[in-house]
Image (cartoon, rainbow, N blue to C red; front, side):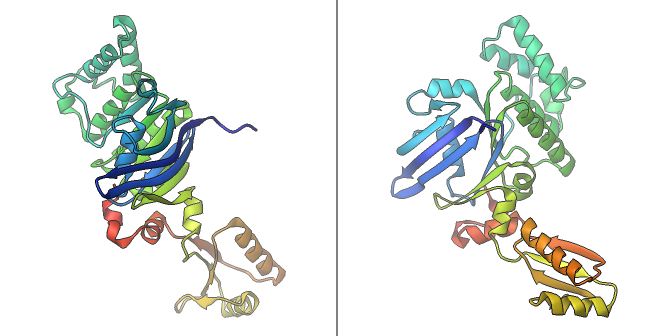
Length: 317
């Protein structure tokens, strides 16, 4: 099986503002058709990274390729291949939803017939047909974000930079937006996501990188990052003291979970360790009523991997 092509390739990227080093030689590789999330506290360099990759500012050193084009040598080709959706909606409140999309089509020089066809296609794709002739001013927060994202797709970008796309949305609208993002990836689009909601990265991202003080301090899947943080354990619940004592003698390094008929034992959260535990219990004929695996979440990962002086998990940006 061949590996997917690379949508974003970054090597040794550096950027300073005066004496402050914002990016200190970071490397990134984002396969096409995936969701990549960049996490980090305020001032970590996330926004600077996005601005460099989207050609808004120039790096001081290193190389960055987006959709196969060098951001420094061929910024026009990069801009033609990407779209950027910021934290705040960029829709025109005085225009209807359809008019906003047609305006974007005109900016992309799609032509009258093709532009209107593309607008109607996106209105249906983003479930905005019923509101298409209403002014954007009347839209709910979730509708405005869907329209904003639809506008970025008029030019059919292959890479989309999403900067905190669900900020300010209620949980229902946030989940609806997640579904929209997943469908985009199913169609082959690459998503580069920054978010202040760690659950969002956990739910959406194929890979996550943690940026702290201008350096990448960790990268991997959500599960891989969680396993790097100590604190995983397996909880075993029993029906009686007999099986509880038998498990204690068999498993060794365990602790009783309060006054209940339950034990806790350390685990790295891997399938291998869980399989080994089940084999031990089966060999000793120990009946377990319930088994649950507890692993650190991305909040724990964030707090463990970033510097206390950099910010807090409530202000990830």
